[in-house]
Structures are given as C-alpha cells and as structure tokens.
Length: 362
Ligand code: NAD
Image 1 (cartoon, rainbow, N blue to C red):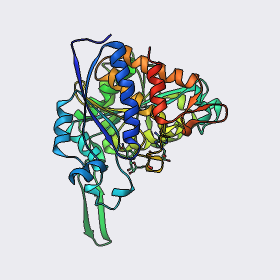
Image 2: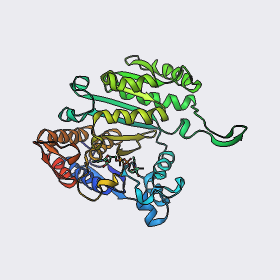
Image 3: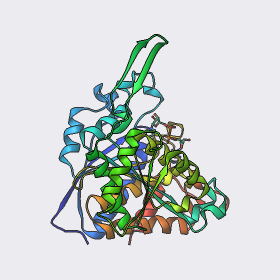
Image 4: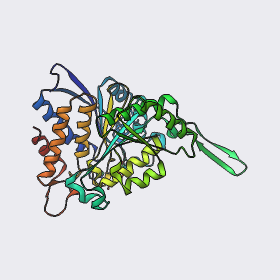
C-alpha cells in the first residue's frame, strides 16, 4: 500500500504521433491506481520532440528540462515523425531523447522482452522455442561508449576517414554491472554479460570489471558471451537469458532483436534509470505516424511503462502488480488492439483498452 502522505511528482511528455493517444490511456490507468490505492500523483505535461519544435522552435525547451529535473520520474510516450525529417540532425525531435538521457544522468536502460503466453502466436519464432513464455531483461549502458565517445572526420591519403571512439571507464562499467546484478537478485539469478573481448580492448576492461562486481553477488550465476554469438543465441535459444547485460551500442542492437522475437512491439515497456530512484519510463516503440490519430495504437507498452515507474522509482510493487494483472486479464478475456488481433478476438481501440485495463485494476 502506498504511503498516503507522499506526493509523487511526474513529468509527462506525450510527444508526437500516437504519443498523446497512448499517454491518455496510460494516465487513465494511473488515475485509477490513485483512486484504488490512495496514492497522490501530481502529473505535469511538458513539451518535447516535434510538438516542442512547433510550439517553441526547440526540440527540448529549457522549461521541460527544469520540470523533468524537479520531478521524481518522467513518463514519455514517443517523439518524431515525417513532418520534422528534413531538419538537421541536431534539431530533430529524436535529439530531445539523447539530451534528456544525458541531462538526467540516465545511464541504465532496462528493456524487458516478454512473450505473453496469450500472444505466443505473434512471435516469429517456432512455438517450441518459446513454449512456456519468455522473460528476458536487457540491461543496456546508456550514456557511455561509442555514441558519446570522441568522433571526427579527417583527411587521409585515401580520402576522408571518420572515427567514433568506444571508450568505457571502470566506474561506468561498475555501476551498470551493479544495476544488472541487483535486478538479477529479484529474478532468476542469472546474468549473461555480452561483449567482444576477443577483439576489443574496451570489452576486455568491461569483462574484468563485471567479474570483479560479480564477487559481491555470490548467489548470481555469471556467464560471458560474445556479441555475435548473443545475436544468434537470442533466436536459437532465448530461454537461456535472464538478465542480459551489455554496452550502449551492443544493447541498442540486441534489445531491438529481443523485442522483435516477442512479436508485439506495442506491448513492450522500458525504463532508463539514474542514481537513486529517478527514472524515465517509455514504451519501446516510436511515434508510429502511420497509425496516428486513428484510435488503433496499442497503449499496453505505455501502461506497462507506468507499472515499471511505480515499481522502480516509487517502490509501489503492489500497485505495479495490479497493473500487470489487469493487462493479463484484458488479454485473457480476449480483448485485442488491431496490431495483435486475430480471428475470434474482440477488437478494441486505444481509448477502450485504457478504460478496460483501468476497470480490471483490483
Ligand atoms: P515505430 O515504432 O514508430 O513504428 C514501427 C511500426 O510499428 C509501425 O508500423 C507502427 O505502426 C507500429 N507500431 C509502433 N507502435 C505501435 C503501437 N503502440 N501499436 C500498434 N502499432 C505500433 O518506428 P518507426 O516507424 O521506425 O519510427 C517512427 C518515428 O518514431 C520516427 O520519427 C522515429 O525516429 C521515432 N522513434 C521514436 C522513438 C522514441 O520516441 N523513443 C523510438 C523509436 C522511433
């Protein structure tokens, strides 16, 4: 049960495309949680992405940064769309995400890849490979490595040459490894750390530090895997993974692969965590401009992102469980948004999905 005296401040970024639609459905569920469990959530809507460019000329206005920093957590739906595609890279809506991650110190990205047993048919993998469901947690380092390393272009005798440096400090590896091991303690106590230490010096440091951190978690089984093998194992035998720990660039690629094997991008939440309990929570999917404004987007990823926020930032596990149970009841009763619907199921839109899941909160 929540601490009734505590107020939880949440910055809310609906963003672009289907963002505002799935956010509305999510906030409906959050309101229901507040009523049922007596929690005091104060939500403040702020602009980022294309909507912010249209209103202020900037993808991440200072007011948004200030309000996010002053909040306990940030909820973000999605940003971007064709309207802003011709802008230079630094002014595009998606730049707001990179900036927010950096400014808020969000170094740990958590992406659960779950196959809901009710949706096993949606996976592109054979039934025997995912029988009994699948539950992988990808823990990706988010503010270091090649995406943030030194980069440049220079003239050489062979024409222009460009470089991006993959660099990790012991501190950066240590803190993300601790996050992964702590999460594994609450799951199946297994961490597979993915690197390319047969080739890369930065990976050799990564492996050494992960092994050192593992000494403090004697009940967790640690294995290492090269990234090329991990890409293969994810489709060959995904059930061997519990927590998959990896660097920024490897995690970017592997978490997309892991999400695709679940077959339903509209169902997958994510969390990006900073030191302490602060976090930003968002669906894995983008702004889906192809289906925006039609009340057909699946809001479950957004709703499950709210459950992650309750669990990881606010410590409200009972409330988080009640959202996850409500999503299961929604699926058990045969309701489906169009992206996951097949014959014999009851098709529902974005809004109705939010209403039904809120109704199933117990
Ligand atoms: P996308 O995830 O938006 O869409 C990919 C496909 O999945 C589309 O066919 C879309 O209709 C479908 N889809 C996505 N979410 C869905 C949902 N909730 N319910 C039903 N179907 C859903 O990826 P994209 O098309 O590559 O990108 C579109 C825009 O979103 C781009 O501008 C991109 O830069 C941006 N983007 C933003 C984020 C973010 O805000 N975190 C992440 C990825 C992409």
